Image 1 (tube, rainbow, N blue to C red):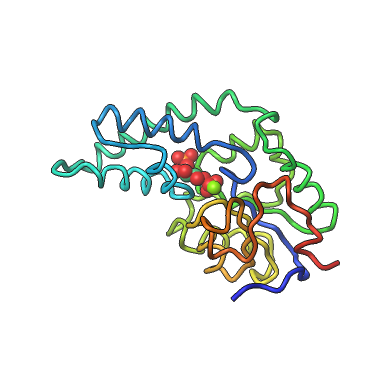
Image 2: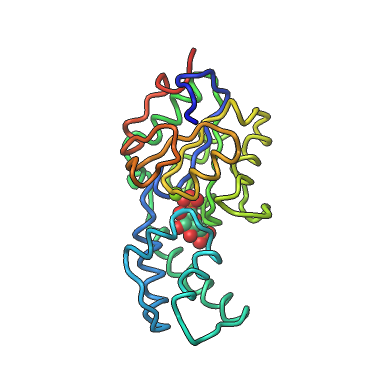
Length: 222
Ligand code: B16
Ligand code: MG
């Protein structure tokens, strides 16, 4: 069932990677390097399936393709740390110029309308990244994914953002580029705005191609 839009909102809760900036290629290069070292086939299509999935969940999906070999917990932790080191080196070069066009403007327009803003990223690197992108001050709430029992597609991260803001989930718009994220937003009882194509995000209430096409009045009745 689709939400009726526009409706009166109290908050907009954003995913980060793929919505406000493009970190997918940096994640891809780091996972690819690890997969190559381990001799596991991994291509861009495999990487697309990791969108919105947390680090250890992503690693488990990659290792599942390594038939006949098992990797214990200590080995998995070491692989994840290696991949994250390469990823962190890449995003160390990020700056405000790496924001998608319209990202900061959208956050400012939402706040200017008196709504709250939240960040619901599965990435443990999100606080450092929003700092480098120069948008940390535009969020009322940044959820720590390490504090949650379950990652996307479970609703926990979006519910935690709404609770921290003090908003009813029914009055929140969630913005996501991943199918797992759209499922999490819907499970939280929020309206789901997809960034991408309707074919990739069939569960979304509405889909726009990029954040530059976001207009608050399409979602929020004043
Ligand atoms: P990290 P999002 C997600 O961020 C990415 O989409 C996903 O590819 C990544 O594995 C995950 O963060 C964890 O990231 O290894 O930095 O903790 O889309 O939820 O903002
Ligand atoms: Mg994302």
